Length: 218
Image (cartoon, rainbow, N blue to C red; front, side, top):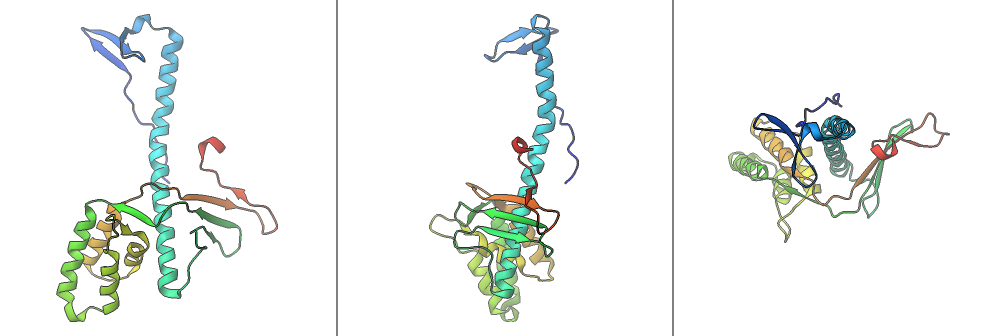
């Protein structure tokens, strides 16, 4: 991940008629010169820490999104190419390096659905146009995958596993790739209770040690 940089936050100072004020917890403006030095130092400290915490939180959220997408695409590849799946009926699954020294675990407590932004309709329009242009030249299995991916359930949600299967298709076509980018941009993880955890160990005889990302456990 990229280095976390300090985000410049508002100072909390409001200038009224040339004088500096700060709002208290009730919203009242208090002259800066009447605020206790300890309170002003505490305010500066919290703003500095939050200046690092907020971009770090966004960075971790992006990391989680990329991780879940990579794992989902791998699952779709297993099912498509090898007729195999990871995990049990509840969706809990473990991914491990060949040497047995690193692993990623996912615990699932949600249904297999995500919501999508307006970019999904852009992707659907592009793919509909390409299918029409390809007509008889398009393979039936590709047409079936596209059709299934855009079938919605009674709540208007799209199946995540079908979308991942669609993303796994390798087709050298600019318009196709444009549609795949639109799908990725459209993906919105909501109501998620999927927990992903990371582990490593020095040898296969050692116990697993968590690679901690949770700040409270660091």
